[in-house]
Amino acid sequence: MEFFDVVNSRYSVRKFKDEQIKPEDLKKIIAAAGAAPSAKNAQNWHFVVIQDKELIEKMGKTVDAKMERIAEGLGEEKGAKFLKFSRFSTFFRNAPTVIAVYANEYIPEGLKEVLDSKMPKEDGDRMWYANPGIQSIGAGIENLILASVALGYGACWMTSANHTLLELEKVIPFNRDRHKLVALVPVGVPEGDKKSPAKLPVEDIMTVIE
Ligand SMILES: Cc1cc2nc3c(=O)[nH]c(=O)nc-3n(C[C@H](O)[C@H](O)[C@H](O)COP(=O)(O)O)c2cc1C
Image 1 (tube, rainbow, N blue to C red):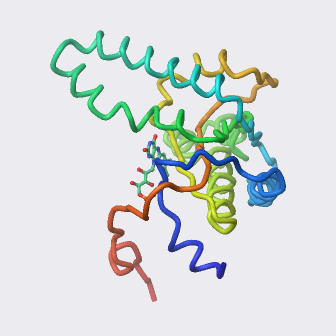
Image 2 (spheres, rainbow, N blue to C red):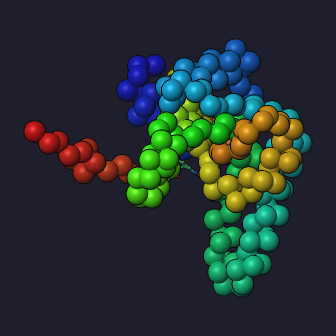
């Protein structure tokens, strides 16, 4: 598929066919993720590919349980509102493959020097806000998703189950020093047609300063 066709046909896929990704495609998808740029070439990512249906369901149940606890803490009205969109946090359980994205710790380049030189706290705060470590992970995830589309699959970048990261880290049998779970990406063959919200026109997202 031509690059711009891949970019423009990508959408967040939330329903999948009961069909597994071919192992050779999976390798290409993860290799594409690993080909992304990363700050200082830290390659501070790890992609845990989960295809064990029982584990995926256990992860779904773990998110369900955390959402129930959050809803309880919110009280009846706010809790019901919170649970109304719970499917957006748990639909990964219907995907044949769920990629759990882990980020290794990354201290922004120059942060220590800025703090040591007694620059205003705002400088350090802005450096954390623009966190290069997490920007790198984003580049990896987007490559992963675009590669999936190029190979005929679909995916969805997911962070709305992030209230359950600590519990999910206990359920997923992957432990590596300082690597932390940051997102889930279900991948598979899309069921149904492209459904995607409209995008802003280019003029609205671009400012040219001449
Ligand atoms: C960082 C990030 C987190 C997201 N988290 C979720 C999520 O948890 N659940 C979900 O259903 N969609 C999630 N999405 C998908 C967005 O809702 C989607 O990209 C957006 O609505 C635009 O639709 P499109 O991807 O079909 O173009 C996420 C997207 C990004 C980039």
